Image (cartoon, rainbow over all chains, first blue to last red; front, top):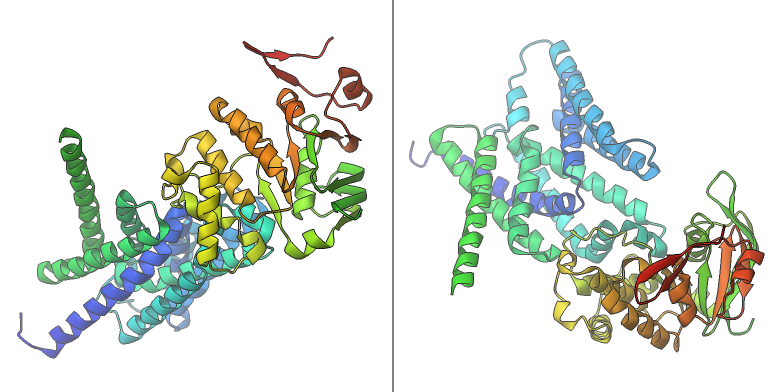
Amino acid sequence: MVEGSIFQYEFVIKGLLGAVFASITAGLAGTYIVSRRMVFLSGGITHASFGGIGIGYFAGISPVVGAAVFSVISALGVEYLSVRQKIREDSAIGILWAFGMAIGIIFIYLTPGYSPNLLSYLFGSILTVTWADLFALGIMSVILIFYFGFFYRTILYISFDEDFARTYSRYVNVFKYITTSLIALTIVLNIRMAGVVLVISLLTIPPNIAMLVSRNYFTIVLLSVMAGFIGTATGYAISYYAGIPVGATIIFTLVVLWVLVKLMLKVINKIRTTS
Amino acid sequence: MATCLFEMKSLSASYGAGLVLQDIDFRVCGNDFIGVIGPNGGGKTTLLKVILGLVRPVAGELIFSRELRNSNNIGYLPQISTGDSNYPVTVKDVVLSGLMIRKGLVSRMNKADQKKADEVIEELGLESLAESSLNQLSGGQLQRVLLGRAIIGEPKLLLLDEPGNFVDANFEHDFYEKLRDLNQRMAILMVSHDIGTISAHIKSFACVNRHLNYHPSSEISNEQLLAYGCPIQLITHGAVPHTVLKTH
């Protein structure tokens, strides 16, 4: 390790900011998708967005922009189809999932030359994360905090009992579409951190850790953000010192954290029942 | 219809193919307690959905009293809980969600709302469960929570869809007693196929089988049902649970 080098300083700052913003956005969006049982849908959106990355490369525009367009369109498409109930949702997601990947692979193959950052989109890399990426993720954190903060009960009640919500409002679908679009954008921005293949775990593991200890939505969000920060920050550190890919390290760290919390609760329960 | 809450005039409703409700004339007033009976698929739930605005009538009209229209205040207990009981939401939050009807979709809860929720929770005997999540409740407790959600806004009209379906036997008596109390302050429209239970509590009944026949008394005889073309399953509660089937 070169002491005090610019490179090292920048890496630490980027890693820290990335961990903060990733854990805030993933905690808010993740609690929503986990409690609404949208994990598979979100996985589909993530992989569909790879099509946008491929087209972005091919057309010479930012792959993140391509991914954002693809993910929002596919997310709204699935929501629309499930509202209409004209198609089996899980099959639709399965098709979307592979179709997006296929488009991505075709366009990347058609793009002349070598695509150096391709692997970083698939598996995530802190080295290729730009200040612009972090800025976008920071803006997203602020948007999500305000959105979920202001519309907390609206979102909570629509997700809990959509049919009942329809008895008092005609705008249930509007809210569903807005929230789903924000989730899709959150996923895309976090792809830079954890990669297409792993980002869904970044969203789902923290709320699942939180749900081990709380059944209150608001508490779950707070605990998810905390768990996410511990997981991502520790993951970065380990990945840096061990020289292994950051996305995989974060997910590995989060799963270890989940197991530890689960074991801890078991031990606490045992002590309680025996005493 | 000075004190009436709403009136349907020659109302018809459908989900696309064929009329589910046809030419309905019906009204609910002040302290009515009306049992809605009829065969499965006869349009009982659709009747409630029309009142709630979830199904738009294709013909005829539905006129709400000024009071009901201004407050948009109808309490509703769905047939089966459409909510996800594994969703991380507390009993108190669910009860509070009943206020959204009056406050609108985008709303925040103030101190008075929280206090009102505590009162309703206490009234329904759920104090110890206020901060529990729904997956920790029994069927009867869940029913009470959803009843709390329906009544927290002090509605003038309460719609109940097959409440007998998930009431547990211990709570059933209490539940109908509770409805009798609530009937002092609001009109109740209760859909049920359980006619044995219904006739003991209601003041009048309406038979819905595409058409609607209103009968302004709680006594239901077999002859009346046949005359109304209202083939329903009669369930009575004796010492041994049994079902009385129609004569062949």
